[in-house]
Length: 324
Length: 164
Ligand SMILES: Cc1cc2nc3c(=O)[nH]c(=O)nc-3n(C[C@H](O)[C@H](O)[C@H](O)COP(=O)(O)OP(=O)(O)OC[C@H]3O[C@@H](n4cnc5c(N)ncnc54)[C@H](O)[C@@H]3O)c2cc1C
Ligand code: SF4
Ligand code: FES
Ligand code: FES
Image (tube, rainbow over all chains, first blue to last red; front, side, top):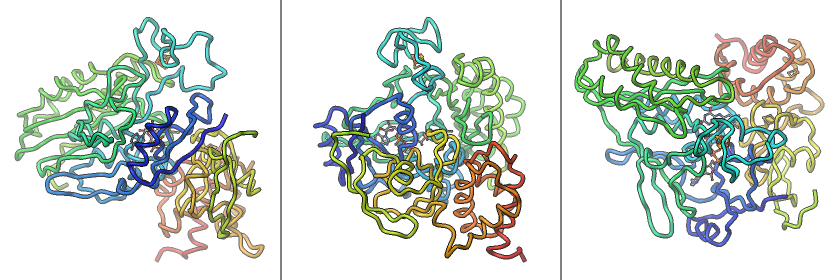
């Protein structure tokens, strides 16, 4: 079986194809979707490549908002010279997979990447007779007894953008809507992006703020090519030495990135010099948002322990004096 | 492979040569280079973006050809290992790999040399750490990487001289 490939040259043409062709599937860099097609895990009768749709690349600072085009590649972000206050995004983008993947992978594709699981993301020859939820059945092999698919969402960029209060612009024939990143992800491991079939993610928006400092840390087995086992994006909005607002997001926490709100609460109003003392409690609270599912390489308890480390390292890296 | 889909007309520049080919629309760049262009230096191993054996340069940057559609390389410049030697003479990076014993089975070598080429063109006097990072998307099961690192350093010297 083969797929047809189309290259629309405008959003209007893209929408028209998505409307007319029920099997149409959007492709940006293809680094998330094409490997599954090669492994015969997935088949789409029509690829709609976004390469030639104008206006989807590059970044700008307009007023108080950074705007990043959905088709901007991760290497372009890595080399962008974006403000260091967006450290979490820069560090996340530059650690995804490998240089070759970052040369093709886009920020839009990263946010919308498919959830992954030890059972689903393997060669079809290992599949069992009874389908799991993701394949239309009604059981889960990764987490027996689960009521729905619990495949992990392993994006590096999404937790960083979430910590930075990022949102996305979705465009369809009905117009534009802006959705905070937190609201894109539904609470299950399959079909879990709150996008309509004909919506194209065109831009990522991040509010600029002089008081912001942020960092991203991920834990992996190898230094490269691997997906994160668990990760943490942390952002502080400072008033002098005092933390006015804190956001901690744990990546790979479960079916979607998870805000660690109770951990954040412990940091608000603290001064930077008080943070080391608070850290053990903050880490304990943050670990609670990590679901106990295994990844293809480590089990649930190991992911929790590594998650605590990621949170600790991310927060510690924010303690350096401003401008350092 | 038989298919009743209409073929796609690909215009592309491979190793400096402009080409036009009718291809199966969803063919990967890897299959296009091997099966249509007959350039077997680009290797297929994992087919899933996990090893680097299929690395080629797309508009001067290394990418995995196994997870790139040939159609996505439309009107682009592609460089494969066959494009490196000129007039029967090896490229300095190829020479350095031979001199350092950085090739054993050779399956990873074309991809690593192309990654190194794109990297050295941007960074003429790299540190060991920078070389390791640049080559982090290319696995080698044989050499243990030490000779590869030495070869990239030697290649930098051959191409751009010793750092002042
Ligand atoms: C070996 C390997 C390792 C990897 N490691 C990591 C890792 O460490 N961290 C990580 O985060 N990811 C990793 N990935 C996954 C993937 O490479 C990245 O997530 C990448 O950023 C995906 O971007 P893309 O443009 O290639 O996505 P694509 O495959 O093109 O698209 C992904 C999904 O998003 C949809 N989509 C893309 N763009 C749009 C748009 N503008 N509007 C609407 N829908 C859209 C597509 O339809 C598809 O469903 C890895 C992949 C591989 C093969
Ligand atoms: S987590 Fe989802 S994809 Fe994995 S076995 Fe369970 S239902 Fe299937
Ligand atoms: S064959 Fe392409 S990365 Fe392994
Ligand atoms: S020389 Fe054999 S894989 Fe590298």
